Every structure is written in structure tokens, then in C-alpha cells.
Length: 301
Image (tube, one colour):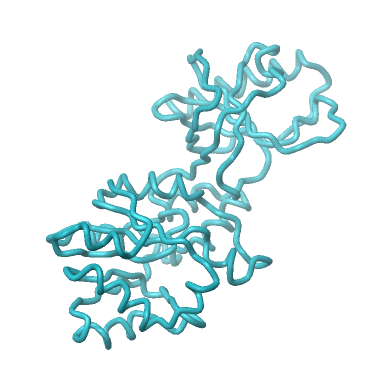
């Protein structure tokens, strides 16, 4: 998958271009349907998205916490099979651009622009005045067609959106988030050195410096790193005294030994095992960790 950074680079693709446009935070089932629509076209499939999240520029104090960092989002997009991702910098100048101007600039280098695919709630341009209706009005002159994907709902009728997924995760409803994402919610982070507390207890952990910003409630979770089962602790570790407690994400990968420092690790959270507890001693904590691992094995198979 090629990574492009300017509209002008679309001219290098040559063949008819089918472009899916959106913010795509989380790459949930609705996003996936938009992207797959472009991928199914008879030409080059391009996903056009933005960095940073538009709200970081338009209203920083109201910007939502991210479900996926940009690298995580790109990896999830790549799994859907596009030929390229066009990652445009989202700036105040870009936000103030008239939607008609953006469409003209999109169509000009992509002289083979065949189709634009968007979700039903997609808006763009100055004051968010651009939408699928405007795209359709300009389509005959600019030479493309428009495919608007209606909102997607879960089997029980809840509309899928990044906002809804954030709320489900923040309130610990991982099953609802999974239903909307089409996969378990996952954390992506870089493994960094810790205080080796887990190793001293007999359960070495990978400590994650997170890339995404949404976390479920503190506690212990059964998860997976690739195909390997794992136990994940999210919280302040109240059993141990800290001058300045901070929220940590510690991952114990079952039946694994190796050096992961500096590597990016994606951890899928499958099910919460228990809340965070303060134990009277390190021995009591060890006993509970053994029980957590046994339960995780039972749940994950």
C-alpha cells in the first residue's frame, strides 16, 4: 500500500481512481463499508483521510480522544486492501477551503477520478458545508460519480459511530464496542522500560506507552497479542506505593519470553476479568495473578 501526502500525487496512479474519504477514527464497520466500496471498483482504490483529527484544529477543547492513532489507523486500513492512502494534513487553511475548491483540486490531478465514496454523515469544507449532495451536483462537470454509504447499525439497531464506540469503551462495554468495530477493541503502544515489578513477582510484563487515547475502566483484562493469549492490567497498581501514581498499561503475554523494548505492540482486549484491587502483600497479589492467568486461559482457549 502506497502512502501519499498531497493531492498532486494522485496523478501518478494512472488508472481510474476510486477514492473513499473520511476521518475514519477507529475504522469501524461503517468505515469499512465505505473503504471496501472503493476497493471493489475497477481501478485504483485510494483512502483519503486526515491528520490530525479535524476537531484538533477546529475546536481543540472539544476534540474527542482518539480510538486509533494515525499509524494504527493506517495499519487497519491496509488490511482492507486499498492500493494507497492519501494522508492530508488538516490545517486551518484547509478547513477554510470552499468545498467546491476541494473537489476541483481533487479531480484535477486525478484526471482519471472515477468515483468518490463517502458515509452519509460526511461533511467537509468551509463551515462543513460540503456533503454528498454537493458532490453529486458537481459530478457531471468534474467527471466522477458518487456513492453514499448509509449509516450502518448493529443487529439490535444501534447506529455505529466513533462517538458511540468511545462511550462504550469508556464505560467498559467491550462487547458493544466489538460489535461496532467488527473486531475486539485494541490498544497500540510502544514497549518501554518499567520498574520490573512484574518480573520480580514472576510475571514479566511489557509496559506500553500508548498511541491511542481511549481506555476502558481500570482493571485486569483477558487479551491477545497476535495469536498469543495475554493478561492486561490497566491502572495505578494500588498495592505498591508511588509518590506520583500514574495509569499504566502492563501486558503479560502467556508462554512468551523475549525482548520487546522499543517495539510497537497491538493488544486486543477480549474480556474484563476483574476490577483493580489493593492487596495486603506481594504474595497475595501473586496468588491473584495466577488465578487471573488461569481464567484468561479458560476464556481464550
